[in-house]
Length: 332
Ligand code: ATP
Ligand code: MG
Image (cartoon, rainbow, N blue to C red; front, top):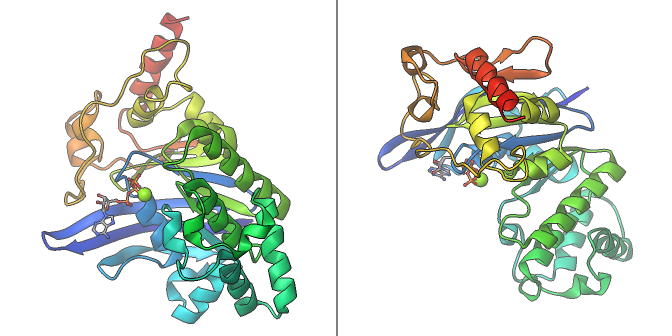
């Protein structure tokens, strides 16, 4: 069953210089129990998409069009109170900066207890027990529930936020770059944590990360964003083994652990688009080695590839794929 259905989402920020379109018609669906990744370079619209789903966009943002449904319920139609309940009880959000999710004036245990008791009829004692249990789950010493946010290291604080997010057994966990800025060992532990909990609770996961190797290890399906548009989507295996959009190919070769053999580490030439620009054609056209006139004038539709669990938005997907296959063959 589909748990989250995002269709044609378009988000505009109104800033001093005019309208900025950060998300331009993004569509994807997440089924029950699936680990879904949203990836792409910085400024591709990942966090804006997550915030639009959660109803957490700032006042300067407007959802111009599109629908967001959670288990068939229209999330855009919720009242603030309904949204507040949904956010704790059914959808957990682990934001990009953990510190934003915590109140510096309260012990972390008090914050978890408060969240639990607002939504469930439990005694102080049981709420406290729940906080300690959650600490154990994320690998923190349960006695530390009586500490304040500033008493934790960055990595520990991120785990506190994960513990908090899980307090009410959500059906969907949305984690926005949950390991950014942490050292690699801690990153691995946190990702393991999220996966372990997600497996135990049988929830679905929307993991936002630019790290394709994390995706390869942890996710079932993905969408690759660029300039606020979906460039390629489908099963992680299919897309990462056989990227058919030149942008995905570029992203993949920028990742040493995923690039085949000893290919040199390549980065995609050029800069991501500035958001004050709304693409008439393909968002990647200015940087794409395959770009033609059509790419400039006509936006490519996301189309399913035959025999694959994969959809690609590229006018030249066939040619790009053929060249990729030839290059692969030549190097073996
Ligand atoms: P990162 O990987 O760096 O987190 P992202 O993919 O999450 O990037 P977003 O944060 O969604 O990207 O930003 C998409 C675009 O929207 C960027 O160009 C950004 O500058 C712009 N943007 C984001 N938040 C705001 C805001 N509050 N006001 C105006 N523009 C914004
Ligand atoms: Mg972001």
